[in-house]
Image 1 (cartoon, rainbow, N blue to C red):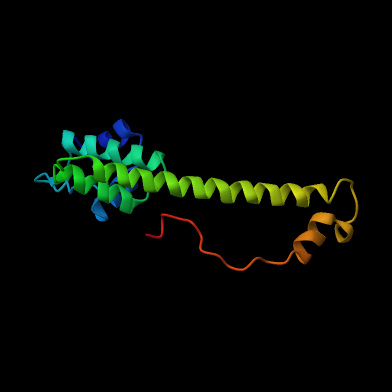
Image 2 (image 1 turned 60 degrees about the horizontal axis):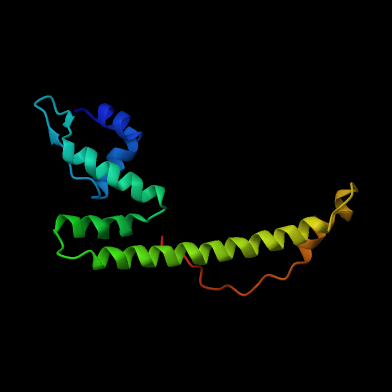
Length: 144
């Protein structure tokens, strides 16, 4: 199948397919005599796998680790479980950070309950006066 058909079957853009090939998540397609990419069922299956991982907000490195386990025909899914457990932990950390952020924003929003001039706006004053917290390590699995 051609790249456009693969894109349509996976609800993925042609550019994304090329990107996944470029970074090694998707195997390179064979080329026809006229130099068109020719994709096989294995590309469709792999691209669906990648897209499903991305839907769970997995990083490319996490996907790469999972793919290497699949390609190596690992005897046990223990390593898969470890990758997923770590990913769940990162999501839980991010949820906690976002909940804190929502609380801070709600507090700011409560400081401006009536229409007034921008100079008197409690939100603007709060944003100007708010002491910045010390920079802490951001919990993200995307930088790994």
